[in-house]
Length: 103
Image 1: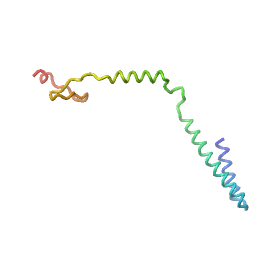
Image 2: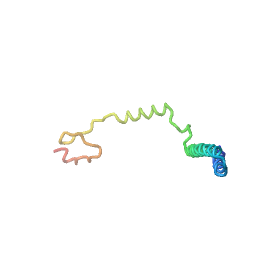
Image 3: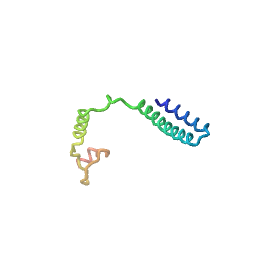
Image 4: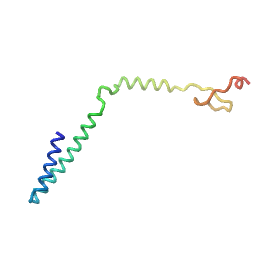
């Protein structure tokens, strides 16, 4: 269909440039522009359809619920050990040496 629209647009433009009637030229230009607009969108839709994933690969409600549950379980706050200045230790901070912790 997209190729037919493209050929229709080109044919309408050819007729518009070769006619001597201004009314027919206006009609052909409108048909050419509409057909060209539709052809561009048809080519874009075909490209999107060709590169999109099938619906089978989408997650189901059961999968989404399981992922949410695992994220909630992972986010439960574990009491992290405090530093000497009373602030909680960040996961990226190194552990203090064993000799410094005992003194």
